[in-house]
Amino acid sequence: MLIDTHAHLNFNAYKDDADEVIRRSLDSDVWMINVGSQYETSKRAVEIAERYKKGVYAAIGLHPIHLETGLVKVKVDQEEVEFKTREEDFDYEKYKNLARSKKVMAVGEIGLDYYYRPKTKSKLAVFKEKQRTVLRQQLNLAVELNLPIIFHCRMAHDELIEMLKQYDKTIQGVVHCFSGDWQQAEKYLKMGFYLGFNGIIFKFKGDETSSHLSPRVASPHSVLDEIIEKAPLNRILVETDCPYLTPPPMIGRNEPIYVRYVAERIAKIKKLSYEEILELTSKNAKNLFNI
Image (cartoon, rainbow, N blue to C red; front, side, top):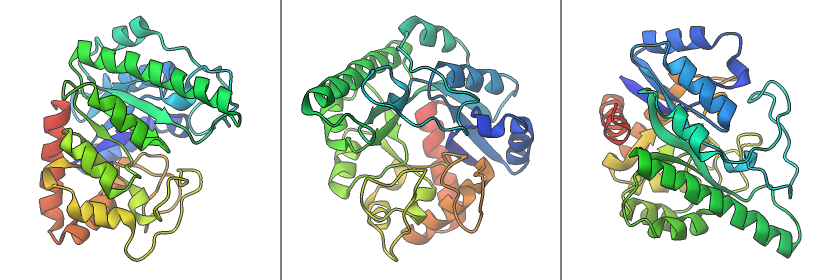
């Protein structure tokens, strides 16, 4: 079994065939966690998970890029939502109610994202504080619910690390689509967090300007190769972030079954068999998410 710990079959990219994609994945012994990015996609993730007895789970949360700030204009991703939605204020009780479902295994994806940001210093300071405030609220929700966290972080690893130090191992979680350097990875690992790897390991060049909309081509031995080499086996998770970051040799829309290519590359970097990585990463996912 493989567990795709970060999928988005709750997104608009799968509005016509989500169940078909899920059945294809389950038939290939690939389980998945569909991750929310705002209230509607979180709700949809729960609804999808509840249609299946096992193998399909949900995470709920407000992605920082969808947070109501009034300070930046973010391009709407048509693969995520069917129509342009307003930016969202975080409603603690609404998300808490969603978490009543036994299929909700995590709070996420939540975090910090400074990729799209205001240009003036004064507006930037307000923008960052708004993200930090809402992140604290969602961290508190995870603590109350005793759920692990799926972190999104882009161009903000040092700030996120400083924030998490305040929680002193009262929370568990994974830094999804890790794109920092080894020094940052080591700090997350020392705090007990997991690192999530996906198709970006084929494309990442070593700077945080990479995104699922404009991936870079990897060098023969990338920064992430080095991090994967050094990371302990009991702190690695595999994911797709589908529909984004499709790993070679596949093209087009990503799917949970393609997580095997991520596992195969990690096995090659770690000089282990694919079966060993399959077993270890699935064990890690079960331990973190209580599956």
